[in-house]
Image (cartoon, rainbow, N blue to C red; front, side, top):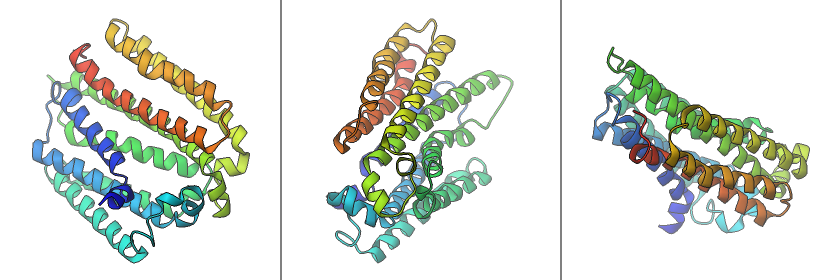
Length: 303
């Protein structure tokens, strides 16, 4: 069971489900005339999780060669599970996810079902082809991470009336800002992971940015992107949190200071251990960013 949970990246799946439920409970439900009931939303979350699990499996299938160099202890294909059974598991998770997504779409807008098909297709495309292309693969997978937040909009914020127009537009804007944050920080993390895995990727004839430009240049690009993310967060604070003291303090200690520390460390990072620790730090920052929705709800509500 432990190997299976590692194969599907269970902690990451929990993170996806937690993110969607946090935004549902603390950002959408209190303010919007939501369109999905508890069971329909559960199906939406489970659909997202199943498709993501399928994406993790197909990624491992096409990553065996690089994983044998980068992380031998995490090679599950042809050790824990045969490639044939892994493909079967991938199809089961993916089709169950698409099916649940179509069911959830039936109770909002049926055309929303196309979103799950597109996401599943892009995950396959990323694992098979796009991850080998410098920057393109990083951008695509980061967009897919952000889509787990963005997908809430067409399900829960589609009913506009004279009374809820302003509230719905504000919630949509908030979700877009959160999705942008998730995209940026995941893009940065993907580049850090490319630096960490450069040896295995090189032997697999991949053309990641770390191979094309070298680790040192990518470190500088990452530092610039983190600087951009800092400006983005400072803009949000100055524009939307002027009178929200607790949320501002929260952002300072959980986002701004850790990102400043990250810039200092990435500038001199050179070993797998350093990149692994920085990648973990980015995951923590993303978690704290998502949890800020709870802080807003209890201490600095939007309305």
